[in-house]
Image 1: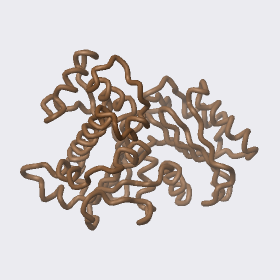
Image 2 (image 1 turned 60 degrees about the horizontal axis):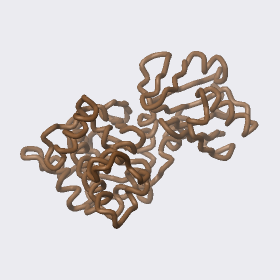
Image 3 (image 1 turned 90 degrees about the horizontal axis):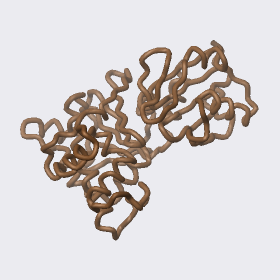
Image 4 (image 1 turned 90 degrees about the vertical axis):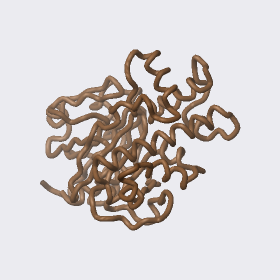
Length: 308
């Protein structure tokens, strides 16, 4: 493998894709963003970007919003799928690494600087132990880091407890409408914001975009949606912290998280996060961080590329 050769890096979510080409650790081309709905295949998207840059490369590191279970990769929140074998045969003959998108992002945690993160609540010194990265977006992703090893999960598809304080009526409405139990992803995602707003306002549809719900300062149902979503997020982080033993830190990433955490009551958020009769001490000592860098996936790809 010739490390001096260019390498394409990409983070392909359920809605958007971010792409760049590296030469060493430096960008060789202008980073570009794509809407997935404008392409009928991942291969056509990647070829379009390569043609635009005019750079020839047969190497790639790609993060995708899907579990990596074998050769065929099927996205969870859209209809796209591709064969890793065919993608390597047709474009990236020298090297192709395909990862879950949150796994890709989590590789960037070790490179984060003080200016890249915001401490949520009281400042705490990171302890030794595992770390988790959580990102609400089109879906809800989570990856863990244990002793430097990154692992992807599908934790967003766990069910929301039906008796969750202040949230039970939302769960009941969802079950009645969908004939199934809701998952955390059903609410802690872009579509989830619309769902919660619709239930709270008792409208058949939501007239606001996700961004408008999060930025609206006067609409009472937007404010209630943000408060309930923030509360549910603190609960999800508490559950995941205890499952992973994430004393090394909990990291939130993505545009929804950054919008959601603006102007929050950090003391109240931490109080909800630490709400455990027996494990309060553990949770109290677990630091929470908001990652301000919205290109965390490409940053993670750079870390992998520089160490490969």
